[in-house]
Length: 241
Image (cartoon, helix red, strand yellow):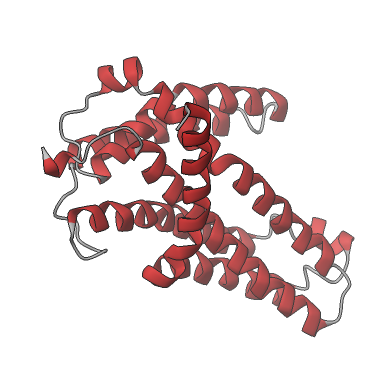
């Protein structure tokens, strides 16, 4: 099989498995779905979808922002859990098992991701354009650290920070390629759902918000599956060495 066909096959497997995960471990997407829908409940009660003006006026409402923090946390946890499910299937362990995790690699990689996100947040109030540019640069610069974190989830205790910055760019690119197209499509649907709900009858608004929460759950399983499968391609299982 040519390299291009092999990459395409792996990409399609990632898309398939991101949906399959809903059957294998339904609690994983639910971790993202529940806080997303809880925020939608708050938004509907605030009257956020009554009109475009109401949507804009209530976008930074403290109650909505509080639910938003839980929503982001739920999404991040669901993504990590999705990757962990696939790692544990390789190990023959229960999907929730933490026994095979290389915690040093996970924590170092996660810490770098957090640090890389700070400059963009700091400059947001001063200049959104500068903040966006800085965030983009820092995201790219921290991609090998993401590879290190994922390696820790799958039990790779031999990888180090220097190694992933020297050798992990290919894996980082593969993860982005596996997740990117589907994520962008789902993000577009996610945004459209909010616009489509403006000024609509309450029954339609609730239907769209349920659908939207499911979309976010799929975004989580796609990202986590892409992380695992993108990392795993061409790498042996460390537990089998």
